[in-house]
Length: 312
Image (cartoon, rainbow, N blue to C red; front, side):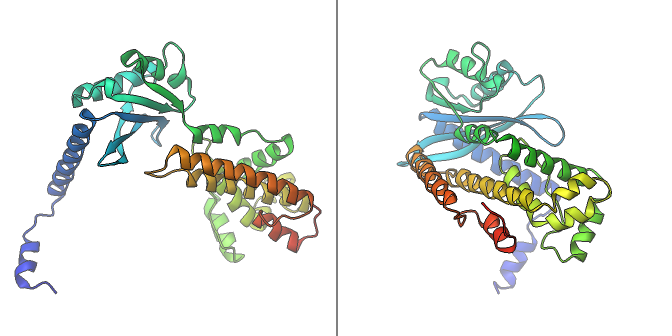
């Protein structure tokens, strides 16, 4: 399509692992250099998140927002392993080292956003306290997605019991060698899904997805755990319990949709505020509709009501 001459030039491009790795490193260094150059000449805000990866190592991730060419630009700043106890002082030292190496001034950092972990917010030794020692004029904010995750943990005892049962069943299957057998059973029964999802308190999308998958595979789960957990298996045959499971899955899916909608590279606090206020208004409407027996806003609960005569 492009001719023999171009094809010959393409064949001459070295494709060894070392060459590709070196090219990737060069591109990464160029991107980092360009970003640091921008931060040296403008004010910026930093968002921090500390979490543990699959190997058990603590990782500090930093994102940065800054004005560039008339708009707010968001970029990945760094990901650094925390080798010690992941205290506020150590996290701040990691940021200090990055700033010093990149020749970026703390005075340009006008805001910092963190979750509510003690290492971040502790009054005297947290990251925010350490950062404000470098720049007293800095504004500190609490990540609203983390607040939403905390708020969604407040469930009634009855719904909390359902969530705990679901987590127990999922982890029971995923941690057992029978996980493959469960997949075979699902395929034999013609289920649309054949694997379970792990529940994780760290990943805020986990809860809604797990509940959705459990609801979809409720018949297969009942069959699979009949011998190991007969009492729990009986719940998956209880229409009232399944209706509450469907409701819980719908609620967390709605929360997930809200959380996803307020994210994005160019999301602003004004847009986020509008979406949250709209969601709160929807909740008031939904409450009135449920009191009148209308559940259209909860698709899985509505679908279950069509097949089973359950009073809302």
